[in-house]
Length: 510
Image (cartoon, rainbow, N blue to C red; front, side, top):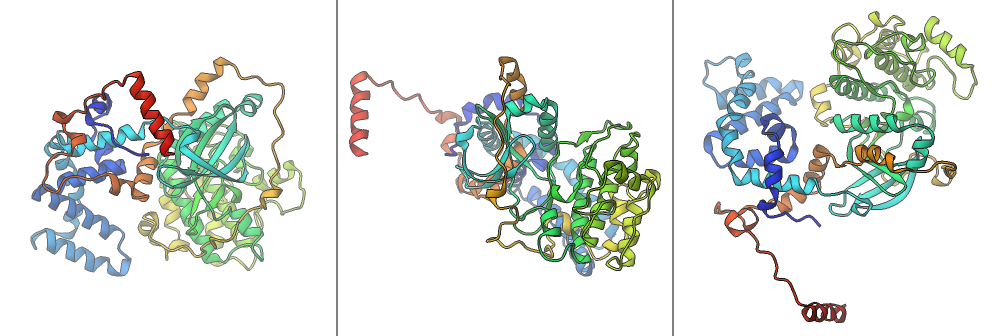
């Protein structure tokens, strides 16, 4: 199902692809691997790549082994007079070197031609036939979410279906497009990834990271006594902090942090999901909007004041409190309190702490739940680094956490289903009185844009399709699909009798 085109079919891509070293050789996973394969063909470039790998390994080395690892790195790559501090400036200098003459040579090589072939595959149309559809997992605001599998690679995803008529009835076009564009922009281990976006006759489909471990709300309230032990709560808070940092780096404020929007994967790591209320904050500007979920909205949001990223740090405080206490700080579960009363508690009343909270946990929650955003942790100029620096995280190596190298405190049972029984998921009623029109097509076209480059390339690597297809000859000769001299000639046209005869043979074989 995945087959490279002849390189001659990739000429338009060659003309339109921006020749940017950072994008082609660092950010795009397949581009990075192919550039490294090119570097392996030259001893001086191979040494550069090995040094970059050694520095990357040093960055994620456990604290107790860092000194020894750093010493080995200096002895291997530098003369003894070079200081440790100086050698760690080198990666940027090496990238600067690689981005000039070596990069220019790469663009003329068969390795870059192979990259163009991968880009051609990446840009092939995506339809419902690209996937196998499986059981319903739950429901979102505009339709159901079901499991699906990419036919070509076997990779499993969650498919979020946005029914076209339901979107139109609820005037949800801008919200749906906003979520799609933000998901497409953010590339984080701690935020669900958008891998594909396509449309069917009745729905727009967003194909997202499959999270089999359920949401934090289910784990807090339906897995024994409400709440978690502090170690588990702190681990999740650290991963959420990294997710918020990645969103804020892209100038996106999330605005809907709550337990049901934090999902667990097969290995027990979390991802932030449901970015329908997230919004881009222009640089050096503030925004306004009374948006979020009652009980998790920050005082400045409740009061309809202007803000940037402060509501997310407040909501992290609410979530950490809820994970430890087993109930949210400003409203009790299954106890109906009027919205006005909850908002009064949020803006005026200090939360209370039980014996479940350690001194560090109480301190972090209080600093995140400061009513005045200017006094809140995370809002004093340092962003996520302020939060990461709190003593409660002293045992967490954030470099290793961000590289996915720390084991989660709870690993979901692959046989268990951490959600409501499928039979309990309510069916959507049919939308009446709404007709789809030709003018709606431009909106559908903005959403259904096919494969998203980085997740798609990661899928090719993870499922070993890259290794299987990306074959070069050992003697350095050019494979036929990359050989300009070996352009395939078009197959000769068959006459009517030949076509009928060929068809008859095929039918008999079947």
